[in-house]
Length: 250
Image 1 (cartoon, helix red, strand yellow):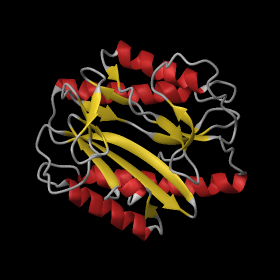
Image 2 (tube, rainbow, N blue to C red):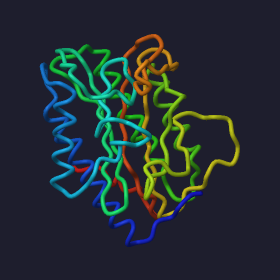
Image 3 (spheres, rainbow, N blue to C red):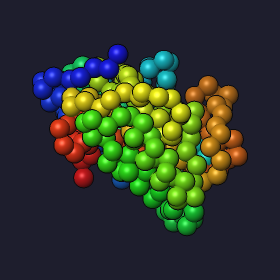
Image 4 (cartoon, one colour):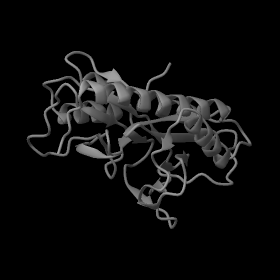
């Protein structure tokens, strides 16, 4: 069931979204060779605590950390640990903040020192895919309009869209209806966008093929061909005009 938020709920979601955005920005500023993914997780936990929020992901279906740290060929759900980042890596950090009963969800991909031209292009294409999709997140459009825009942008950039994982509604639950695919799924009658809906658009784009698999830890999703993957996400509010990016803090 799709939940349209009230004005009071939207105001609380703005706060949750801002906290998530600040936590992502803080973690991104720490990315450097030698930094461990656990250090990034610790920084996010501390910032969330400072703002009176909790980590949306910690304990969610048994997930053991406050954020996802997915390096290189890892698409999503990478578990923070002792792994130290190396020059030339890229890392996708996904953060959720739970504040006063609502979630904010956001992600971005960061470079570790100097990276390859291919990695830079992938990150830029992924970011562009998000904004192309967000431009279609207008009341009266359908979710499929977002999906089509993301897929077209990825393909025009010579990249592939991950099809096993999608965006979603966000609110009192971390994952709500509707599902927001990054590709045209061929289904008819996708959800109509209405003012007051809050959704996550999150392109997961690869430099190679789109197929993914889950590693033995039961969480980390990687590309089957081990090609690089990037991720860009914001929580959006559908309005009567342009969408509001609730997790954007810059």
